[in-house]
Length: 340
Image 1: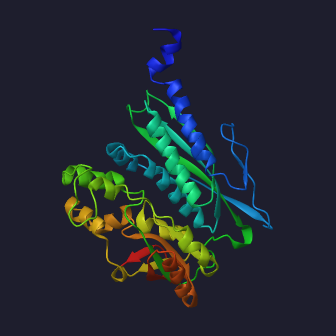
Image 2: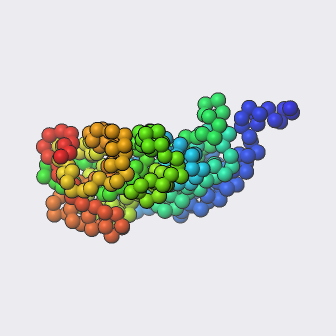
Image 3: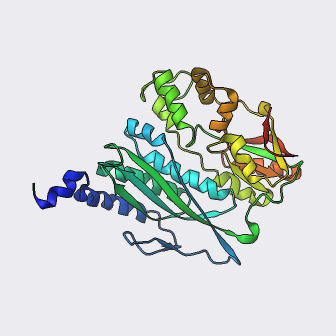
């Protein structure tokens, strides 16, 4: 074994990494916007702050897609989780009324081939293009002593901007304001540890098993891309007082984060039908309903608070963007969330 082969033999192939960079460069370049500064391969990514803002505030968030990547690995399809990552992150800063500016991804794994790495970055790039946002850079780390061969984790950081005076903090929300729910299209990126256990252990499905009453195979259902609510929410931001992205922790864990002290929420469970996917997990896994609502979004991916006279405007904007929305409850005096 030559000295040139020592690193490769230890689990890191620099030549393969260079091959992946060629496809990654094309993906990154495809996301460049008029605000992008610099090119691919620099030590840091740069974007301009849009002109015309009197007091721009940067809004930043870092997140991942959790064990959904294990479904992607089993399917041998890696581009959708990259898009998941972007959409999830866009929703997180949308909660504050922010428009996305730039994104950076982080891929860590072991013995990842060129195709896997490139597919992940291409998925991230597709999500960025959908939001006219620059993929400003990122990092791919091969760590064979930390990950099993072929396994990886995926995370990202988003930077957005909002006019400080227009940023949403939830401080204007009062008892009596209405809550508008935005429909989810599946699990999004949360609850996959439990969902995978029910699907692949309790029910004995394989990723290519056709799931009764659901459209597609187990793998296809679980890889459904996380909904971005940007187009559904942005046109109605002037009518919205607060937003909550319903992620890990469900409605009870996320809605209170957007409400001021002294305000709670009453959610009317009868206003929507729980999608079959969640019902299947609950029944097959014998999961208590309270736990279901704490683990999963249960068909509600975002909730907005609005004054009664503006709730219809919020709903109409969502439906015009192809996202179902409805009045799901109201803000009340007190603390916490009551679902009944």
